Length: 121
Figure (cartoon, rainbow, N blue to C red):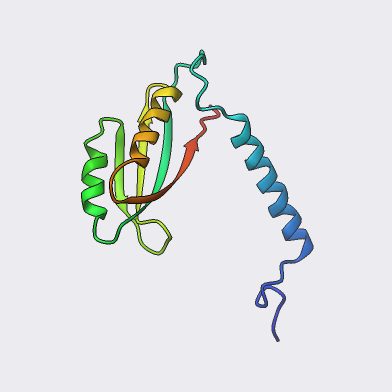
């Protein structure tokens, strides 16, 4: 017997929970302003950056990323649209924004997707 899930049909209850989770995540990200340089929060600002690169340039890009003092780690990944994942940490949101902007300009990087780390502690 073929189930609804096998056909790609999501039961309404599961869809509602997924939609509710998506809304709450979007609200969190929307309310976080990384470019707010007047913030009084002196905590570290961190982000994961997914990077799509030109074929064969992954190791070169990782070496360039790791030359940035704020680069905590960078690794190749497989099975995704992206080729590299990097963790970047800075002493302020403004500094993080500048670093992320410079990463997007690295030669042989086709695209990036940045995920800010929100510490609710």
